[in-house]
Image (cartoon, rainbow, N blue to C red; front, top):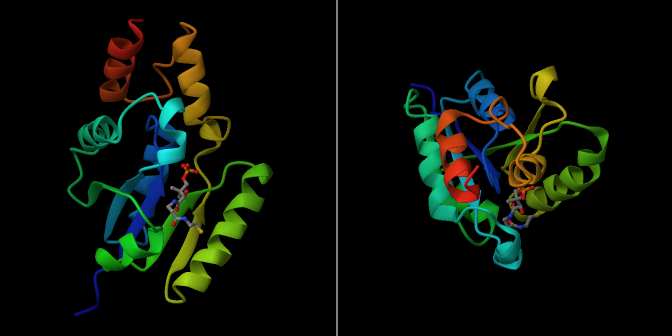
Length: 164
Ligand code: PNS
């Protein structure tokens, strides 16, 4: 029997957008299971909109339809989290050229730390290339309509949090 291919899709996901969802679902074309891994970023504590626990809960609801997609959170190194889950694929979305430099540096460093880990860069559907969690946060906090950028479980929490 061939080995189960487990991919980790790490990020802040504050909040998860439909662009993230698109990447996670597309990853099932090459992975048997995808773990969406919400990173604890102690240094960004003040800027966050949702706690890690809230993000995990929202993501779980967004993917409740597909048991192949799981959600977890981690602190510490991504490579250690991947090892703990026996995952040797890391998925990252690349939208625009400006994403590239940071991603390339991280990919090379992760490979230094864990040579067996493969980083896979995915392009989202064209209509999501302009989308980012930080823009969703900004637009929502200024009263704009973000209903086409996030799924209903995220929209509901945004409305509660920002009293939209
Ligand atoms: O959505 P983000 O904030 O761009 O995601 C960045 C993330 C979480 C993938 C990155 O910060 C990360 O991997 N953090 C875990 C700590 C770690 O392993 N750092 C070394 C990276 S080479």
